[in-house]
Length: 407
Image (cartoon, rainbow, N blue to C red; front, side):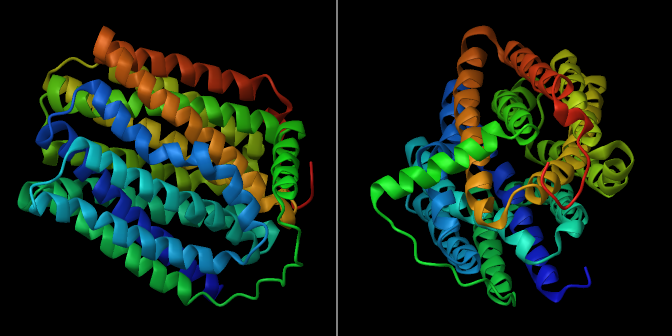
């Protein structure tokens, strides 16, 4: 936090996370309550935002390793603001539909492909590699404060002005993020001109994929993360209709419930550096993933009573804690062991497959919820979280340590 460029970057990240937290509540309420979507339709809408990662993600990685990363951050933020304006505009003109919402989320997701890959690949240019764990922990802390306050604030805004207009606030935060990223002062190295024929692009993609899945510790980390994203997509798809319909929560109560995830995430991110230094990167990742099946199993068992609502809050707290501990350690570790010229492709490859798994998970979660019920979908998520934990426990990753070299 003594590095001015990092402070501006951190501010943009936290601001964007607040907007995302607001619009997450708004869009879920919009889809479930206003547009009266079925669980399967909720799955389709959730999949629309992450589908671009499956389609364009690896190409984004090649681009990020060929151009300066700061301009991509600025323009992707600004473009997302413009696209998000379509939801309140369509609503005000009485043209909003599930298909329109899915279309807007798809375009926002396509822009996020560039933004997120550039953002994660940009951090090693702002701080020394020895500070990557701390830098990612600080980012997580800002993000989780936003995640804590955002859902509750989002639920209140939805109750006050309606879900479509609440999305406007997310658009504003995208603009603020673009401004802050534009003010980041960093000397990005001049990049040599590289051939751009289709065969060269394919070769670059292949190099990135080979690096990820041949690395003795990055490979199991990637596979565990892929399975986790599938499980989380199943869980999130089932959770909104489960909380709003089966548990009978309103928009405000639902927002407060999601805020518990942020509280847990903040606690986890505050302890992430200590956990990483004491347990090692691998041990901290194990701690982060092992709590997920516990939290979502408790969710699946919660009865539609006040006691059940309290159990949901506790489960979200535990789930958030796991994500807070694991995220900074996994990001800091894989950034440290990856050469700078491979950062974009490494991040894009992992995130692309993650989001592809999330698309499959969202569609599967919606289908299982539609055919077998919401609780059955939650149990499918629990099973996937168990597999994600087992991958880490049965690999060399469990004993990985944080350092600045390659593993």
